[in-house]
Each structure stands twice: as structure tokens, then as C-alpha cells.
Length: 355
Image 1 (tube, helix red, strand yellow):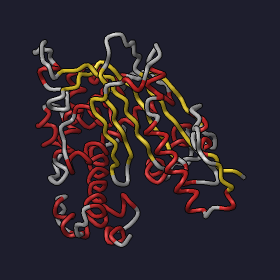
Image 2 (cartoon, helix red, strand yellow):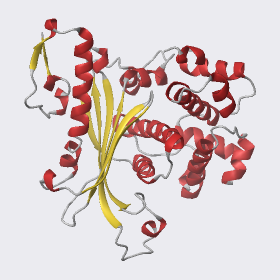
Image 3 (cartoon, helix red, strand yellow):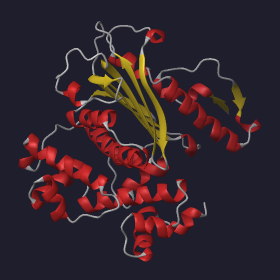
Image 4 (tube, helix red, strand yellow):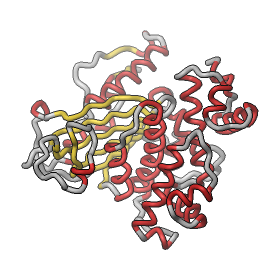
């Protein structure tokens, strides 16, 4: 059996050139798995312009693109992502586009991944602030020299070890569940126009102002909601209809979204639902029902998930002690924190430190 570089993403229809061919039997398995991951990341990041080709209605000369911003990072234990922002030329005709790529290899689990790719236009990049400032948003400055219309390419790559947590315990699986649990046995890619909710989540990722630890918390939370919307829009192809009638009001939806942001800002200061509802000026009942419908989870489950993801980061990446992390996240006792951590991750905090 041969391992060829262009087999790693053969469903993309983007062949790799100049990649050597090896006999699998002549290489250690650990090397083969590492090589597969390396090729996947190289192809994903180096050929992120592939979706730009799809979105652009006319041919582009990629060596002439004016790069405004180039980010390539990982959130520990969660997602590897890249964001590339290009200056949009007046003659370009773009169609906002999303792509979901599911790659599955039965005998090589390390090579499995789910990737989301997006190409969006219509945003404004500020060279000074690196985000969309208030002047740009409301067109208050028509002659700002720092304001540039942009075309933005975003890529998010998830591994099975992260995604399978979302479908644990389910007996009957639909296509979305099969993809998240990597029980769907055929690789595929799917390209569709973006729905409104997905576009809004992308704009939040492009224009946030968080840094360091808070940036990791925000990116992790935002990519989860982006994953939810992408699965809903791209796989389910559902019409955006709200069960809660009050969510048809844009102001109420904005309040629910604001509540989610407040929770992230108070990751170490637990809030009651009453306190949260007062901060965003919405009825408690509306807040609970609206949050569940917009984000697919309860306020408590969302907040606990984000706290535990942040705890993993503090323990494993920052090297803090269990006691320090417990106090930082607002727990009254280490035992309560350890119980919550094990319920979310399946292991005790002290066991993570030994890895």
C-alpha cells in the first residue's frame, strides 16, 4: 500500500505537486501519522486561497494580492485556525462562501479532521487598530486613510478528540452527529452560501479586541458557535426560523448575544441568571429560552463548558496548580472544581498535569 501526499486531501480536488511517494511498510507508524498531519496543515494553510477561487467570479493572480493581516494560531485542545485578510480591489466580484471539509481514514485516525473554510467580503480593515473601529462601522469618516475594504479568508480545523465530546451518549445519530463523532465513513466536502448567523459569528471573530487569555476564551467559544451554525446551515440546509417568537426581534437577539459575551467576560466571577438578565435588560425567562435556541445549549452548560476549557488551558499550558485554577475560576473548594472538571473532561485536574 502506498502513502501519497495528495491522498491526504483528495476530496478537495486540489492535487499536491512534487510530494514524494513512500511505501507504508518501510516507515514507522508514528512517522506516517505525523507526516499525514504535517501535510494536512501545510495544505490547509498554504492553499487557503482555494476557497477564494470559488468565491471570486473572475480569475485572480494570487501573487499580486495585498495581504493586510495573516494569523495562524491554535487554541490548546480546541481548534487550529488561520485568518487571512486581503485588500479588496474595486474590480473584484465576490460571493460570500463557506465550505465544510470532512476527511476520514478508517485505518489512520490521526489523519481525520473536520475543517471549516470561509470567504467573506464587505468588511472593513483598519490598519491602525487592526479591527473595524466605530468610525468605519458607522461611516463617520469618509476620508480615513487607514480604512481598507477587505476580503477575508478564515479556516478552522478540528480533530476527532475535540469534536466527539458533543455527541457522547447519543444512541440515534443523524448526519451531523455522524460527522462530529467520525462514524461517517466517507470523506466529502460541501460548499454552500453562508447563512446570516454564520456571517455574524465570522464578523465577531474578525473584529474582536480581546488579547492573551481572554482571546483564547473568546476564540474557543466563538468557534463552537460557528461550528454549530455551520453544521446547521451546511449539512441541515434548514430555513432560519425561530421557535421563540420574540427572537424575530433583532434587539432581543442582540441582548441574548450580549449575555453570552458577558458570561465570557466573567469567566472567573459566576453570575446568577437574575444578575445576567439585569445586565442585558431582558426577562429571565426570555433569556433562558432565547439562549437555548440561539446557541443550542443552556446558559449553565455553556458557562461550565467555557470555564472547564479555560481551566484546561491554565493547567496544561500555563502550568498553574489545581488550587490556583480553582480560585481563579471562582470555586469555593478544590473538590467542587475537581468534580466539575472530571464531569466535563473525563479526567481529574491532577491527571491532566501528569500528561
